[in-house]
Length: 80
Image (cartoon, rainbow, N blue to C red; front, side, top):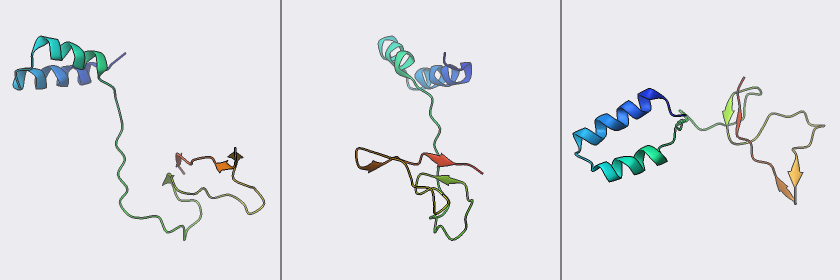
């Protein structure tokens, strides 16, 4: 289900730019929500316990980062 505000904004843009009904139908069918995250500065890992987007996790030295097929898992985020 797509939120009303997204569909409303799509409708507004379609009218503003005089987009054909055929293209509008495709846009409504294919529209997806996303969140854009923008880092303010590069992480230097100097402080343990920071929230992070991607990169490396803060793990105790005795805990190995999980692997599969000789590749480390990706860190998506760590929110503290």
